[in-house]
Image 1 (cartoon, rainbow, N blue to C red):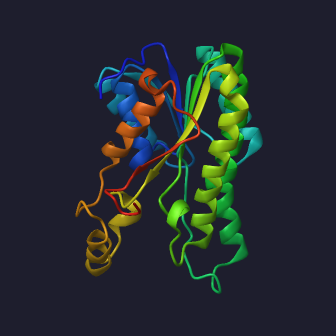
Image 2: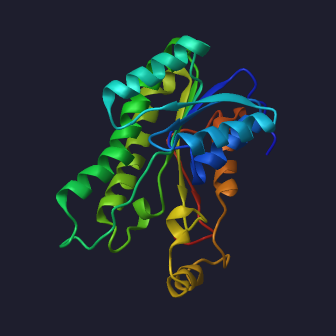
Length: 249
């Protein structure tokens, strides 16, 4: 998809690897100034910015734990100070702590909800202020098919991703009058670090459940984000775009 995001400022959380990296690169290639947020891996974030610049884009890497309210405020203040606005927010930061419910520790449940759902709420809350002043904005939440269909051994992850869908729909109703759209993308089985460590047997079983017969690529998820962030999706809000090869249809 070819879209013109020149003059737009995009923040992508958890953008040092995987889907977040692909989204940052895609936005940068289409002219957006991309803020690559990362929590710990500064070297990986710097590589993403270098790739964006090599493709003719612009941006910078900014460290913040986006589950921390003070750090989120500092992140957005820095962006508004440097660029004057926030046009696109992609809430991508996420972790997993998988286990059957009897063995899942409460602190692991809490960490998943804080990183995945609380961060999306905090960033959306702060971004909305800047977007309302401009009367324009695009918020895109990276949920998962697990938040739609569930998955054994992933109660914490499923709860966080289902929560993101509820957040998307409620916030879309709140901010629509200010020309701000809020949507979600729900990837299925995508080639990322999270799936790279799976055994061949587990991998083949997962692929067998996908009608298109393969894993998705991060770049394919990024194209869905580009669409929702673009003018072509100006009349779409409160929706979940599933990118899963037919896995949960």
